[in-house]
Length: 550
Ligand code: G6Q
Image (cartoon, rainbow, N blue to C red; front, side, top):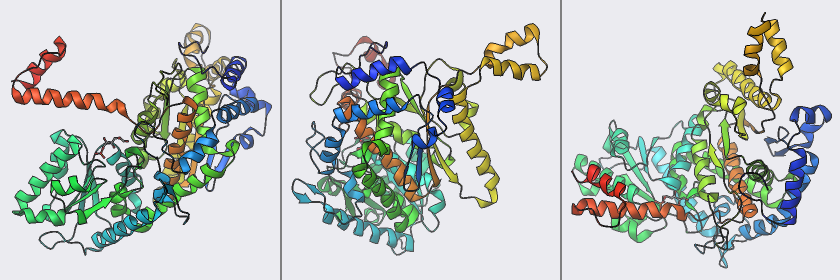
């Protein structure tokens, strides 16, 4: 029992872990650090230039052994092999999850259903490269003969969050490329605000949709096309101003985009795992081909690490195990991602989809309701801003929130190097403060040093105590570059997969988004017919009348 209304799975490794948890849950990390001067060396790992420090966790050597036993019991190694061999690990949709092939720079064949997919992957990469170079060189021209200055990506969810996050993260690498904007929301405000100051003659739209049937994307794409045609005065302009990224050639053609201007990907690429595919086209347009290849290379380096490193040294495996330790044993309901890099401000939103859409599941692979918790709520904001807002709760609130600090050591602004030192110092200080806390004796001494005594001191004292013992990981890279961004994202992708194995879930489907879509279609039809259908609850019926039948 975890005391949180959910059990842990009833297996020997989970039972052993739960018993161990009862013994160690009261230990304070301060004491663990004091006992073992080698704790950092023992609990940190490297993947090439990336450092993963997990020494500030409520674990002992025995905890790690028991967590690794859990991974072995769940057959993480077997599942990893299945993933990399192109098996249909996405059982409910009958698909492989083969995003690793998109960044496989090794020359090794990778098979799905007996077919080596690498020639097709490379062919699309070659077409993307030619297109990107033509746009960036000003050789791809708009209908009136002018070069492209602005790209608008129209897509949502997996066809938006990755490229949007990466384009922001890699802003310093954008020199020489067009400006890139993103429209996702069906709220007309999104499209209107984006188009407001754009010149149709120099704007290129990338319509990104795996299925090419998504309501929001098609609505935005149709309105964007109408905007362009109206301003340039001819349908013929569409051919030079619209390209598509999709798996669905017929629907792209039916929309009116020449399939020659379509960049293909395949059903074995999940939406939220697709930024490495042609969905990454806006990234390549923004940072150039070399940069895009470096992004792929970073992810590929992590694939090789995940595929080959023993479990005890395997960073995605360790990240997954630590997540499970807090989620299932301590009952932690949320997990914070705190990038100390302003340009990573969209990373928490990106990881929210990656983690919560993948593992926000209540049944196991066989369809049985699970008796244990799965994915926590993932959230976060960049530091240092968060320190002046919600960090209060992290330090002194009643919730245990495991944190990931993500820290590039160097910035891209040599003239502002002192800012970077302040940023780094704050990040390290937060992790230390969460771990150490401030004892009553320390708080008392500080108050006395400030000249307080007697009742005034006693009144303030409890407010000044920090319990500490709050866990965090540090993911440190030398700099935020295309390569290190690729590494960071791939670490999380594989972490999510390992957690799905430990929880027994399918990380690659997303049936939870279906019901709302279907009901929205029904309500829209009723609004258009001017009549509320029977079968709604009284609240929904009244709200349809109030909002849509006026
Ligand atoms: C991702 C999800 C979802 C998807 C969007 C857009 O894993 O399936 O976020 O990416 O619904 O879908 P399309 O690319 O098909 O428009």
